[in-house]
Figure 1 (spheres, one colour):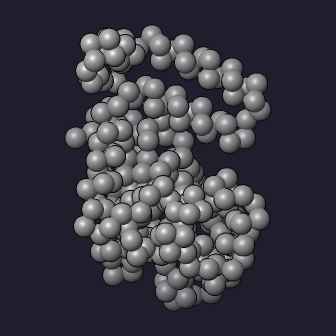
Figure 2 (cartoon, one colour; figure 1 turned 90 degrees about the horizontal axis):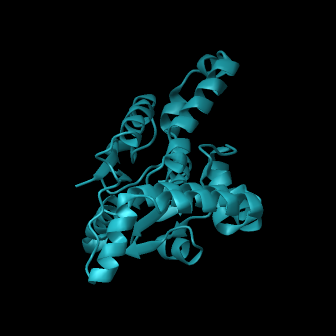
Length: 256
């Protein structure tokens, strides 16, 4: 129905990241980004968790020699993987939703923060977690979180790695809404379908405008807004919406 649902599927490890899972996410995100049948992307996790972040157990089992091997190559692969996953969720010209159905920690939280919208189930716990395992953080989490809560609060959340309830995260603006377990999937799907059936070209340019506004200078943002506003005014979706307004009916968008 126009919605691509990506499920991180390692429930025995609370969907902790593995090379295979992240390579698959890279591949699938690349596919849905350019698939005209997809109007909205939902990222979620299996088995009552979102994502526990890096697989710390696997890290502990890895020989020291492996950890020190080809440092520059490892860093480069990590950079590419981050850009292909959390970077792509942020940049792709389609709305992205993180459906946080359980714990989201470390880089798992970073993936959620990379999405345009975040909806959590009651009882979900969110934490940066990195300080607890002596990591500095990855997958863009510091950049995303700073823009949601400000520098001082983001530093506090990273330094202390406190566990946030879903309700606390909502109050801080980290998640958009919290739903009861029985309603969670229904509420997320309804919103995803609404976005998928909305004016897709307008969503594309809204997202670009809003992303540019994060760092852009006001005049630059206003100029690109003007360009995109005039462009969307020439679409079939805009003409249909104008006719629907006059006819007092709901518009039927086609994404053109």
